[in-house]
Image (cartoon, rainbow, N blue to C red; front, side, top):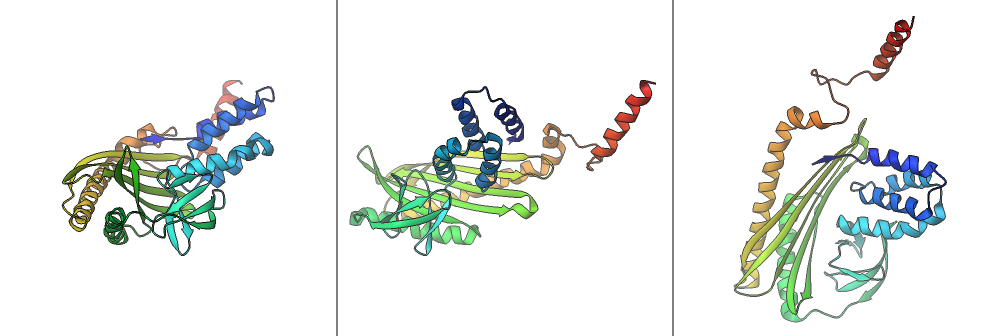
Length: 299
């Protein structure tokens, strides 16, 4: 899927210049734009929206909530006590506090600076629940370390409808602002601990944003349903990692096939089309030519 937020940004700019618009209308426009921000670009776009809106008091009231939503949606990793913890709705304890499942502590998070503070101990998991959680965490650690250069994974044990659930989250990103692109791969896997067989519900989301002389935002989502045997925690963790790897490889192969056809097909949908030669147009020359043509036509 290809989309661009620059058109909306221009619309917001026109709206912000209209002083007759209600305050709520302007902040809603700001919210809508910031919800579309690609990974790793929240602070940059927020600064631009701040200039366009021209009302720091109003925007600052929304800043923390909008940034929190962005961090949670993107599984943003933060450094806490020497290791990384993903910020997700699965470990959101409310009041700006999040759970570190490895050390069984909660911490306060400043969503704007991504700094943690005020660590507090949490009640220990039941021994059997922690055995399942740690088995999947350890197996997934090895997989992520060998497949994702910047990958982070967290496994949580939650209770839903009276059943114990394992939730595994993976995040890997590549931020290259100097090359004008950013990318994010994140996946989420959930299943109940109900031997002998359970169903795993997963979703892999991939985003890539390229913004040289325009904006191209590619996104892909792949839902997954698979069965997992829970004979014992060690075998189940190994089978789970194989399941994740198979799904990752399948999506990666599909994306590569799409990438091969991208120059011939997808570029036609870009708002500023490239010529057959696929070289960048010199728009200044084109504009000068058009002005001269108009000038002589009027003579």
